Length: 481
Image (cartoon, rainbow, N blue to C red):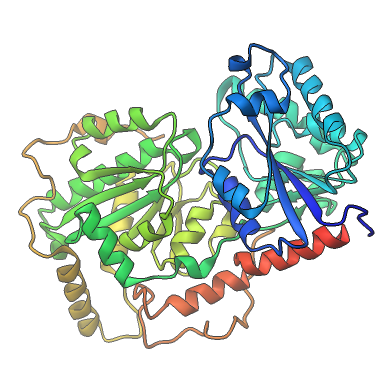
């Protein structure tokens, strides 16, 4: 397809450019594109309140918009950032007027518009098409919606996307995300293309030097660290994560039958990366559960890959996801992962992942975590040698042990602890990439020795961003797959 535009430019529509899953995945893809041929621009949203207008122009919004996390990255890569007024549900006329004016002010600049903000894609994509953008794409990145009025509104405004012809292409990060946004009928008709959320897998490969550095900075050199990466919002289910961690501490501290004697007295920490509207509530809950001094709320990190190295286990009890890149990143880092079965199954790529219902008790999740930490073994290996290796590993990680995993004499609130908590499936090819053959010479929990095998499985499943960048570059140049 002849573009007629010279260098091809793609307009990505997002809520913002913060450290979210979609934003991280797009920027990773952008960094790996041939930018002499393909360039990305970004159309984001911001409250019009500071402008004093209900339907301000992009320039007026950009003048008052506070810079976001990835702004500098976009500019350094050669991209541009534009802005629309944030859609509130009650400003439909003003929102449409701003979109029409935006495309009128920027004619013939983009071959593609790719809308990752699907809650309003049925509004801005038809307007973009009428304005002359040749190819309109809706990209589903979530397999659920929030509870309450917000969720109902999202479903209402997404409903037109269930009809064929609203877009030229429908992309989804997983089959479940495709069904959630575009409906079963379009998915069954082959009208939705699944493109996994890819990462730079080698950037996350296990690195013992980085591990030691970050653990020293965090003061957890002699601790076992359970990790989580995700923004503090409803979907991520941090309240259940904290309940699970509290139960881990309680099981170890009250192990009268010595089921977990190899971990007695070890320091244990919960490391959480991310920010969000529910963070303060979760900090209060951690205090009520008497685990606040065991929790590290680390915020957003530009070097998040380094923090995976510092972890010893990854827990991810989300209520719903499109396809969580953080679980892929954790696997690339060699971490055993306990993941909610509400999460799309495409993320279950390697032997490192176990899935469990969030309807199960927090104590059941806690037992699973402890059992995984204790059973990092190749079942063909000599059990005695595995036990010796395990003991050496815990000694190296935890150093001098404490008598109690709780650093205070306070007893956790038992009532709170016991409260009720409330792609198509990826087929991994038998022939993996070079170096990915399973060896009986290492345990799957040996992060250094198993790294090539794990990375090979992730690449074969389509999670390598370098490979995906080549595919998408060809798509943008041809206008079709």
